[in-house]
Image (tube, rainbow, N blue to C red; front, side, top):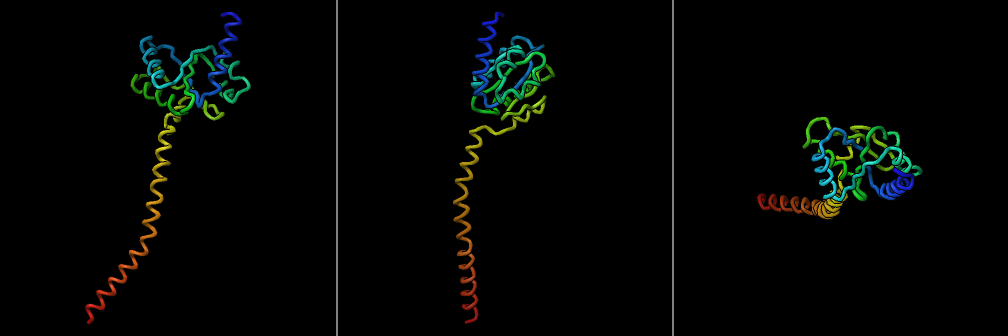
Length: 176
């Protein structure tokens, strides 16, 4: 690879990784071409980007950025998988693919999120994070439920008071 080609790859990587919400690192070594193509297709269908690059070029691309925290994880063949908006989706897809694949041919090499590098299988925990849509749904559910619970709470003393009055009325009717 010529120097100008390397500089172009570094510029592209820097531009792409700057907007990444999170990055998952893995290694395709030992996988059959059909398996790699299947994974790439699945990633592409979900809007997830996948890039194989030399560690030296990745180091130069992330230099001076928050993603520089993942430099210690760059050893051996490295595949970068990321999504620009959803931090958890890349890890979720990779975790599901590993589960479907079975065996030890593919694993989490590490990850990066919010300025911190995550080593090895600990990066799987990123797959357990809720997506933005799931978080929005939970917040919406809370916002919707709170007024109803508040009204029920306000009505409870009135119901109890009415119950006391009705009991007193019944008591008075029995005694007369």
